[in-house]
Amino acid sequence: MSIKRRLTLIILSTVILTCFLAFSKGYRESMIQAQLLLDNELQTIAHVLIEQPIHTDSPMLRSDLTQLLFQIWQDNNLLSASKSLAELAQKPSLNGFSVENLAGQRMRVFRLTMQTKQVLVAEPLSKRYALSETMILSAMTPLLWSVPLLAVLISLFVKQGLRPLTRLSTLLKTRQANDFTAINWQVSEYEIKPVISRLNDLFKRVESAYLRERFFASDAAHELRTPLSSLKINVHNLRAQGDGCLELDAMAQGIDKLSNIVEQMLILGRTYPEQWQAQFSPISVLEVSQQVVAQLYERLDAKQHMISIEGDDYVINGDQFTLATLFSNLLSNAIKYTPSGGNIVIRLNNQQGEYGWQIDDSGPGIDDAHKARIFNRFYRVGGDKHPSGEQGAGLGMAIVEHIVTIYDASISLADSELGGLQVRVEFMQGAESE
View (tube, rainbow, N blue to C red):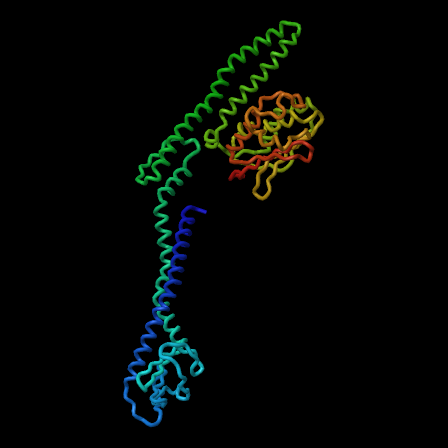
């Protein structure tokens, strides 16, 4: 949930709860005040009636006063009354207010006695409550109707208040991953100033570390290529002149291993998304897969591996070098760790718009504990003590992960049906020209 929505809901909930409590309190207080006013009205009417002179020998019934229920007594004789209370016998009672059942209704009754004259004035409680509630609701309804308008205003004010934060979020979202320039934005809000200042400081530090990490390995690898080439030539000449020295053979193998590490470091230094994505073009995945198999066929044949490519071809937007490096590293690992006479299967999947490249082998596989670390640089499962005895630098899968990032793809490891490791690369989409 966004900060804007959360703040709006919190403020609006607080306002609604406050309005509800105020409404409840106002309702009770208004009802009390309304009852006091109506009681004062009954009291006033009683004083007016008791002062009126009435001279008659028979009770005078009034049917025209529908809103007023009363009785006027003198010397225990009924002088005048509302028609609905005409047959009601007077009951001795003290002066003042009471609630009684009269004429089949619950009524608020006020009795007043003056010398030999007594007046009873009554009003239905239902009428009093209805009148009080109407008055209260009339006063409270505008407040209830104002809540939606208040919600809109709160949302607008919260949006306005969070505008600097929203702008900062947009700037960071649209910024390229390799853009470490300072945020040039003069703000007046005290809460945002330290955030921008700290971000600019972090950008500066990250850029420095990024450049050091990016160019160190590449520069070091370039510097090592020349002496390694010279050393390799000299060892070759010595081996050609000698009768086969074990030390020279070991030295040649070490130079080959070091040369492979240097080449891997150079590739790793070049695999940055911004460098390759600009030159992407439609490329056949099957064609690249076949080329990689052809390049590594001598190694496959040396270990008598059975290899097959299954599935239908599809086209993605990519680069020949990076895609070939990706497939070559994965196939090279499968060749390394699959025993002689084993099986390797490459599958191309193109179903319902999903483009996948998968390789299965019949090797020993990898434990789940090591799968999470296999993409770390210079990490090898078992190191050089791996049962296969294969040499390596531990950079191949790190390069694979970098290339997968270039393609905005995903890579997953699982146990293969062949008994070894299954590696699956999922590309986001194919080329428009597919």
